[in-house]
Every structure is written in structure tokens, then in C-alpha cells.
Length: 144
Image 1 (cartoon, one colour):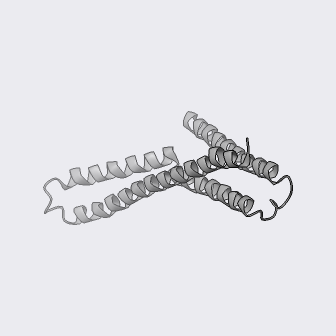
Image 2: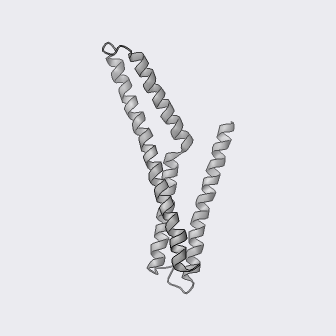
Image 3: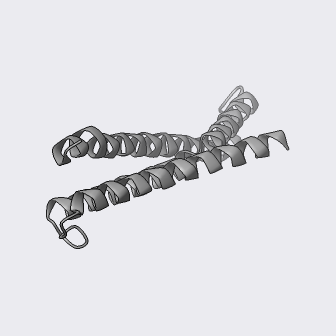
């Protein structure tokens, strides 16, 4: 595989994937947290004006359920952790790519492509290992 193929078929695709996944996880995390905050703010309001709301106890209960469901989904899905991890990996890949393209140190040598491939694959390998470790940790927590 030559330099252009590796950049297009491996590096750019991985950068795009991590970028999309980071944005997606950030959006889910923020959506769930905003929903929790809004519901938590509405509960005391409804409770304070319960004479104006005929079924205030039902509404408070429903908003409490929404908060619990959002917190549970957020905890199970690790959106915040994934967002931060994926963004970090994406930025590391970009940094290596631009250092390689500009032939900046350490890519100002004869075997720059070999070194670049090794570093890119190391970054991706570390991310995959971290993901597997996190997945195993979550499975152990569920079994306890």
C-alpha cells in the first residue's frame, strides 16, 4: 500500500469515524443531561403550584421517571466517556497526519511512511484495547 492509499483508505476513514462518533456521543450526552436538568427544574415548580395543576403528583412522578431513565441510559451507554475518548483519538490521528504531511519531526526521515504507519496503528490499537477493557469492566459491573 502506498502513502496516498494508506492516508485515504486508513487514516482519513478512521479520522472521519472517530469524529462522527465523538460528535454523536457528545450530542447524546448533552441531550440526556439537558433533559434531566429541565425535568429537575420543573419538579419544584409544579410542586410549588400544585393547586393550579390538577394532577401535579402524577406530573412530578413522570418527570422523576424521565430523570431516572435519562440517568440510566447515560450510565449504561457511557456517552460522555466515549465522546472524550473518541475526540482524543481523532485529534491524535489528525496531529500525526499533519506532522507526516508537512514532514515535521519525527517524519523528516527516509522511512517516514513506515514510522507513520506504526504510530497510527499504535494509536488505533490503544483505542481498541481501551474500548475492550471498558466493555469488560461494564460487563463485570452488571454481573455484580
